[in-house]
Structures are given as structure tokens and as C-alpha cells.
Amino acid sequence: EAQVTQNPRYLITVTGKKLTVTCSQNMNHEYMSWYRQDPGLGLRQIYYSMNVEVTDKGDVPEGYKVSRKEKRNFPLILESPSPNQTSLYFCASSATGTNYGYTFGSGTRLTVV
Amino acid sequence: AQSVTQLDSQVPVFEEAPVELRCNYSSSVSVYLFWYVQYPNQGLQLLLKYLSGSTLVKGINGFEAEFNKSQTSFHLRKPSVHISDTAEYFCAVRFGGSNYKLTFGKGTLLTVNP
Image (cartoon, rainbow over all chains, first blue to last red; front, side):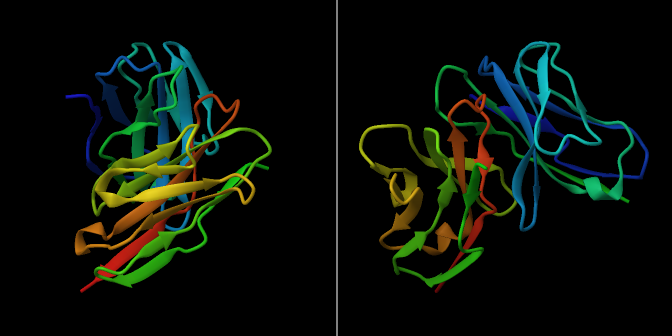
């Protein structure tokens, strides 16, 4: 089944403790992206990647890092999480050269206390 | 600036009534338009998309949307809603030259009451 898999689904952590949210897709998509969803703000792009070793900032990149060492994986790293990063995070992927939109993961609900 | 506006944050309707969820965008370049649905505690699922051609597009679950270039709108409609349509709906736009980025509206919560 074609899918984007995120882990974990839920995560509660403390301020300053580094964490990684994993994202993997099995569709051989070139494009991958991370969004955060906050009430009343919709989805905002954090980072994106056009292909392996090609990443760039989205609209709200502060406090986040990403890497793209393999085509299928695009982890989101929070080096020193803060309470304002409490949010619902989505990973998405898309084939380039098409306009089929994104396939989304199921989301990761992160709480930073 | 390129932006996406969903005019209603919440839309309550009764079961079997028609519904329209509004979406407008601001852009001087070409656009590709999408509607996504998010059921409670789930991810986003593509409802329909407009890429080119006929301005009336049909999607899953009986939804349809019409692209109006002159009004820069892409409103979502359903002639008769069900309780199971209760969800949050997001309009998303890919602006020409935006490296596949989707810009999302803030969402409309559709609540269908019995």
C-alpha cells in the first residue's frame, strides 16, 4: 500500500530534550515536506526537500532541522524543543513532474512541557 | 503576496442540507487547486483537485468544486450532506513556480447536525 509513515503518533517531552520525528514513504517520491498544524492557523510549511541531499526552509523553519540522506526518509529534528513547538506535525510527499498533490502521513501530536 | 483565504472558520448545517465551503486565493500566476478533508484524529485526505480543463471538478464522497478564474475562487459544494461529512476541510493552492509547495487556507470546520 502506498503510504507515508510517521512515528511516533504521540509524543510528550520536556523543554530542551532533543527529539526526532521520523517520516518514510514507499512511493519513490522525490519531494517531501514537513508541516505543522495549529488551531486557527491551518498548515504551515516547515521544511521541504526536492530530492536526496536537497533541502530548504519553508515558512516557519526556526527551531527545526531536517536531513534527506535517503530518498524514502525525511526526519524532522528538534534540537532543543520549546513549548511553542507544541503542535500537530504532518509529513507529506509528492512525485515531481506531476500535480497530483501530496500524500500525507497520519500526523504526530507533539507536546513540549 | 500569494495567499489562500477560507472565509468561514465554522459551518454548521443540518443533515441532507446543501453546503458550500468557500475558498479564495490571491495570485497573478498560474495555480493548481486542491481540497483536503481531515476527519477527527486523522491525517489529510485529498478530496479533489483542479489542474486544467473543465472548471467543474468532481471528487470523492459526492463533493464537487468549481474554479472561477475571474473571481479567483475554488468553492467546494455538496448537494446533500451526511453526519459522516463532519470534518475540517482545507483549501490548498500550488502557485506557479513554487517548487511543489502547497499553501493552505486556515480550514473550515463543517459540522453536520441531525
